[in-house]
Image (cartoon, rainbow, N blue to C red):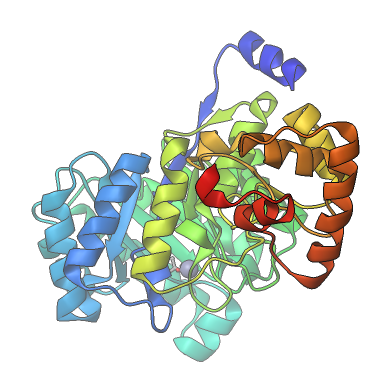
Length: 396
Ligand code: KIV
Ligand code: ZN
């Protein structure tokens, strides 16, 4: 860890990775997760405290509720850029521009499908017509703001040569960010990274940056996003807890903490990582979307140690089994969970936090009783321990 830290100190400059949060747009598309406007404002304010660069607030043409939410979020939030999604359709773009009218800094995110599946089956169109429509949409969006992002939907399954032509054309038309979504979560990390590199090497991007937008269908969203960053993408599109269509989107907390944990890779974000856990809890509770216990960074077990060998190591030095300080992500402390797999060291430690010190022999006896109880009970609480050694909780 120290080597990485010193390496980082030696680095002249860390490269900025912009965090584009789409919890309120792609995340909110999850069935049963819909939020009302007040709840969306609450999440948007939490995202502002978290330090995201861009909040994708909604898809205004899709419903009056979405339109209103984008308007209200634009008024309520001042630091991040507020972004609204559109299809490559003039009406959508006009409605998005109207919804964004109060935003201090606004972005229109327009785009169209570029894979053969989308061109043939969704649009019954041709590759040339798609480029034409994309260019028209970007030029039209530029009438309302000079911050226009273009998405090439299903770029993950789009032929690289054609994708490069699309990207070149939309950048020429005025796109400042080009989003390369792996819409179906299909790519392998090396493949997605190579796609980004191909675009970096073959397109005159001028000042535009490339953005990752990965889905989790095969469980590779974070790996693909990081591969995109290592190959030249400078914006990452993410959601809290990885919520999103089907299996979800790339999880903000995973990408941010992966970059922070590896300073030798030379990237940084504006995220105030201490706000990660509170924001994760807020999103989970407002959206009624529980976080799986073993979810990286924010799951209940992410900093819980339950086996005796691990507990002994952590009690001697946390770095034996922890690569992140839980406080860095806003979690008060790690936890040593007492189970039938726990050892004497964990029991002794827990008892000492309860103000009980036992001599070696007493500890041996208590440990035998503890094991008997732990074989019967899934979770051992402090009250159980105190009862076990003949002290009640009141007395403590
Ligand atoms: O996954 C996707 O392609 C999207 C676009 C609409 C940006 O969410
Ligand atoms: Zn998406």
